[in-house]
Amino acid sequence: MKRRARTLDFRGMVEHRHEADDHLDAPGQAVVVHRGVDRSLTMVCPDGCGEVLTINLDRRSGPAWRVYLEEQALSLYPSVWRNTGCRSHFIVWRSRIYWCDWGDELLSVGVVFEARVLQALSDTLRPYSDVAQELNEVPWAALSACRRLQIRGVVVEGGGDRQGWFRRERT
Ligand SMILES: [Zn+2]
Image (tube, rainbow, N blue to C red; front, side, top):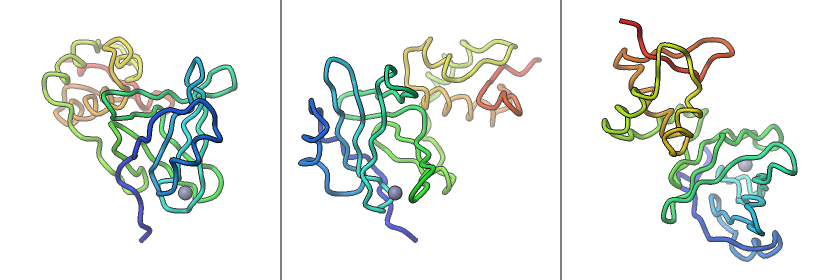
């Protein structure tokens, strides 16, 4: 089994990509390149393959991820799924790395937040990322809440191309 990082080690912000290299030598270490806006997240691949990943954060240059910073904890949305090299697939939430192929479960966000998510849902399917935006939270928090509400039978997930969409269970 490979030695995979379990946490993202956020080393701070730099203005230019080449400055990131000084901060990066171990799997999971990451730097945000920020010049006016977030440009990229540069990260040593957390699975230990040794590659440095440059994840685009700037919508002007194509499909973009979004970084959320709370204190020094970093979240990234959506997940990273490499289609070359090691083909790692992982989620970063509050500087913790969840490995999708290991079936890692997102941590609980607590019943208070779950109740807010339930309130934001109706009997029409809605993507969890929309709920997160409305509640001003990281999408992974909304997904975690939806999954737990689903286990309790109060929320239902859509199927097919409506995966990741949730609604209240009709009573
Ligand atoms: Zn890798």
